[in-house]
Amino acid sequence: MKTLRTLLITFAGCSALGASMTIAEPEINSGERLYKAHCASCHAGTVAKAPPLTLLQIMTGSSVLRAMNNGVMQSQAAMMSAEQRVAVATWLTSMDPTQAAMAPAPACEGEVAAVNVGNGAATSGWGVDLENRRHFDSTSTSLSAGDLKNLELKWAFAYPEALRARSQPAIAGNTLFVGSQNGTVYALDRRTGCIRWSFSTIAEVRTGIVIDTRGDLDDGFPLIYFGDLVGNVYAVNAGTGALIWRDRPDDHPSLTLTAAPALHKGVLYVPLSSLEVTEAADPNYACCTFRGGVAAYEAATGKRLWTGYTIDEAPAVVGKNAVGTDRIAPSGAPVWNTPAIDSERGLLYVGTGENYSSPANDTSDAIVALRLSDGSIAWHQQMTAGDAWNMGCETPEKINCPPEDGPDYDFGAAAIVATTSEGRDLIIAGQKSGHVHALDPDQGGKLIWQRKLGRGGIQGGVHFGMAVDGDTVYVPMSDFDGGPRWPGTPRPGMFALELHTGETRWYAPSSDRCEGREYCQPGISAAASSLPGGVVAGAMDGVLRVYNRESGNVIHEFDSTTTFETLDGGSAHGGSFGGASGPVFSGDMMFINSGYGIYFHMPGNVLLAFGPKDP
Picture 1: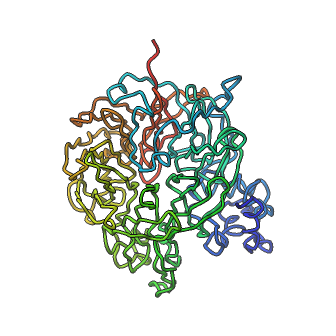
Picture 2: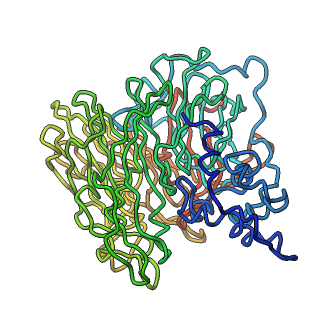
Picture 3: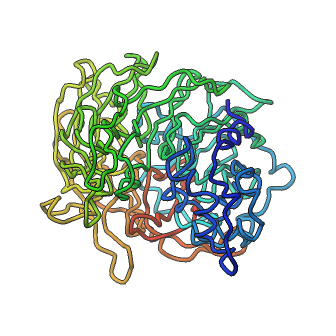
């Protein structure tokens, strides 16, 4: 377990405080100059764990200021005045970090203020459904697809200081847990949205929240688990919001946690991703050194048990780029999806991303099976060979772009362990190439069937998550990108496939509702969720749609691109649906985030709660 003191010591050796540097007036409060004087050398890759500039720039202003005032950067920022720290945070994030955010909802009072988690997780979803099927059956919800048209909006919760909403809510008993862009995790009353407690992290929380259902209690309550943008994983008391442990599972400065961890038999499995792919746009950056993987923790204590890497070989210098900067390989193969747990075979399955530098190896763009016991690779099945790509490929000079130059066909969507009605286990995996694959877990991932449904692209194809209900596989298709690298006709929308064979049962193309909407696209990037009678998915046009299981007809839709009156007496706005935060069902209610203000999508900052109409 790493305490705050340990994290401070980690940075204490940094010589970038700039004590001897004098900055003349009137530029003393120039955020950029202050950053270069006091921060840049640490955050330029010379100090392990120091997040790079590109990662700092997508944090909120208040998160950066909080880190300097009383967080992990307090000692490094001590030589700057309060005004200067504000200037640095403002320059980095283009946000005013001093603007006091209103409480996004009133505090719960009286008997309602008490957290009651009941028997643990009261819904399905990432980290709870260990097979990643994303199907909400009668044990989770009393609703069917046909009921959703009869629901009404019960409350809207405005995330403060947010342009996006990516953390999938988790529910236990009377409480909903969710993270936010400004790094706050909230415990809300499920029925009314009032706040029971809040907890401040170091940075944005994109991952879903995972609730411990095993019965190991802290002060009578289970723990919840999640990760943040700069690579910290947390365990927090579900009843009080008290921090139990925190750790950063890898020293790489560009480490980030995008997907929810998986919890199984007292062990927490944390997928490791990275934003180093963006650092490579700088020709002077030595690309690249990150190795994706999964870290396993003793969930109750935070003791790290093992780290299993997707690339066994440690990176080494293999040459120079055109401006003389070291070129380092092998690298990449990040994991930005929740592991699927196969307890029968003692394995977990993850999909990997591309290599960041050349040469590409055979574990990128692959499904990798890691042993639960020690994280070693049991087998891997690569779906796209020779895929090395980074953001240097999107610059005019392409200095750090590997010769392969893509096509960047990650597995962003989590692998699914599904069982056919005939009793055969399959691993179902959707890829950004537009393919869906079915693998045999008993034959080392042997390919059983494969279907190409979409055109694919950097944000195209299958992006964040499919769903399986019985013998039906629901496949949301993004197909956002175009151009010569991804030829063909885009096919955004929802597919239903036969689990046994991969044959298409139906295809519901996305209708184009984007006229007059900037950064609007018709495809489905966000994770989908199924329930009896159909599947529900929010699209990049901001419309949530319910599809009939048998026909694929849209039986209900809700346009979230509007202004909502929120619990704080103010307002919030919906936008594109994106990320791994799909619809969540619990009892007779549905919860969904709206807003994906990143990568040219419509911003938004609202959590919406739907329930039965009042009599």
